[in-house]
Picture (cartoon, rainbow, N blue to C red):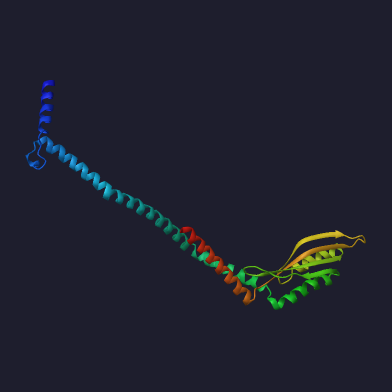
Length: 227
């Protein structure tokens, strides 16, 4: 058996000798089979490298897109299912915003609001030692007007004064409250009454310009960073 194997290997080796590369049709069977297999492997390798590998990457991208679209679809379906509830919430929010806007006086109504705060203290028998409105601080949708005040009187009257201010039809909040007792037994309260008003057209235009400038700077910074 070993002799036959040696003869077979010798015969195969002999078939690979003296091959004419220009005339492969004259080759013995063994070289033709081996080179055919090598050619097939080479074609498969080149096909994978230049065609199928790109298709594999494309398939992965398509699968990811499919997952994203599926998730987006589920989100949209959930939104549609809750559309009626979202509309009701939108209407409720709009009502609250309208109510809040009605509680904000304009510039011409601010004097009347400050007069109401002063009258609330006088009506409770308090003495105003300080009542000084400060310059307005403009916010994106409203303006704040702090009023530094100091009143003296009985504890009960001061407490009722704060309750009266909180019950005004306009929004006024008390901040930085400080109580102290004088030598004569009279209670003194120092605070900052924060009043709020709506922005006038010029202030609204200025706020829109500021927001547009900030957005432009932000977008410009992103573009510069991308470069």
